[in-house]
Length: 78
Image (cartoon, rainbow, N blue to C red):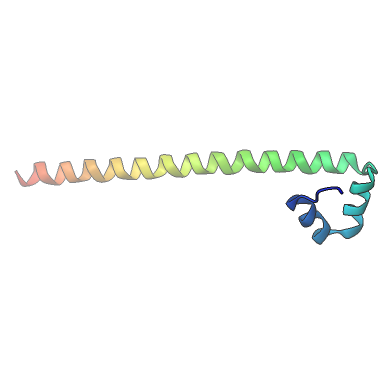
């Protein structure tokens, strides 16, 4: 008896025919499209990482500006 994994259940729910082909060992015919999709996902992942880094840098710069503004106000009062 062959074990069915959770990822296979997801594949089955997405496309029963593709799941069956996969279980039969049939190779996909659209390898170039799959490779292109994988490349798009990699590029998107890089953009998400860069945007997260830029957001963190923006928050740090804002915090620095607030600290400098606070120091300037305290020095002006003294």
